[in-house]
Length: 531
Figure 1 (cartoon, rainbow, N blue to C red):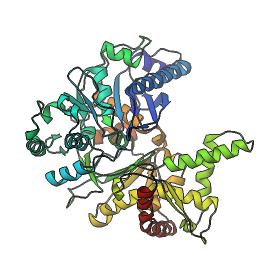
Figure 2 (cartoon, helix red, strand yellow):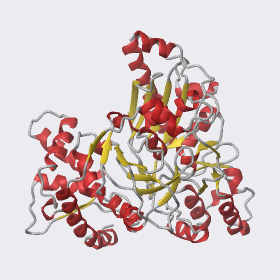
Figure 3 (cartoon, rainbow, N blue to C red):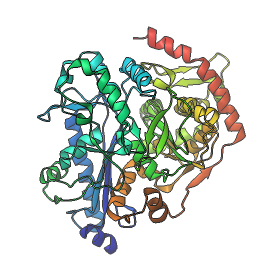
Figure 4 (cartoon, rainbow, N blue to C red):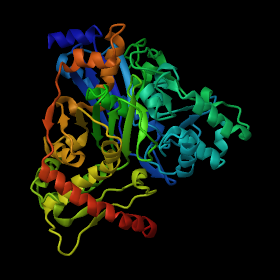
């Protein structure tokens, strides 16, 4: 306790705060990279005027409350006030669209990654660049707004992401980490900057619009892991801590996306490593040894926080349907007089899934709350389908829910494994899907037909990863790469608990996938008919 108290008082700490889809989490780590205090705030996206969004006042409310909870925990556990911090890093759900004018006024509501409203723009830009542009990328949103002739576009002075917005307001710096920037516009890993040729192609495409701005001028400046990204201003310190306790002048690392912090938190930033983040959405990333042979709609090309090329399969839907059914079961149990214990409920439901038939007894679940670009669906209608002779049990139902959470991801990952022959030495899992020990890990291993590891720190997630990036900026030696720093200073050879795919589970998942893919026609019909 005395050692940690001294560490806090001397500022030998690093703070990471991540804005996830359902939770804002803050994690403070000591000089050995171990979490010593945390705080969180639960929030939800809104569906307003046919747009998935968050209000920016909720950003600051959630930030302040999660930080205040961390401060209170630090005071309770160690008996000291948090007045200064060695370094800070912010991250958030990637992509989306946050445009501002010259006065810093927000021009339209935040359009998040979950929206599937940019299909024409994404398709046209993919053809123009010969590079896959997903619908959720910032450049797709910008170009779609241009195609729609939205009045606000002419007034844009700065376009950023959620992580970039928070960092800007706290430091005055309009910058992004390269991993987060790769979700705004394609990156050239050789220059560690936006792809200059594609910038020129975009400028030529919109030249007749007569905008006063140039794309290079409105995008954030790109930084790589380890670079200095500004300091906490007096105004920024008050935005983070309205009690006036936290001091200004604290250095910040480049703001990153949840993909980059997930890679960092799982030590998956080196070639031949991969990780899968499974929560509200699910995405898997493989750090490549060489470029892919062609463009795939299902695969995004992003980067590690240090700029290495990464193949990413991103799916909009993962645990949302599991959560919805768990809430229904919770209401039933409470109505029957049982104790309201959400953690026990989730653990029980996950564990009972292990006893289901390996093919889910003929049950099929579609977890599409929102649209899913990987399967070409512009909207979602969650469905549960069974045949008269299906084996309808709780175990099969929950196993089908867990399979469904991985199903769309498998469609994309099969392209990497089977067509591009990408090889991974390890695939590390993190996120809520892996919270119940071994269960989600076993299901994911069967889905990917690849060993899946989970570390003890997986529950800390991206906030811890962001704190590690802040620590790396502050403490690394001049020539020390992020990969070497994580191996030597943070993980010390710890590869986590590994689950090998069981052949019977792999076969069962493949049987489920045949029904799942055949039934996508039902999902499309539901979108068309059920308004």
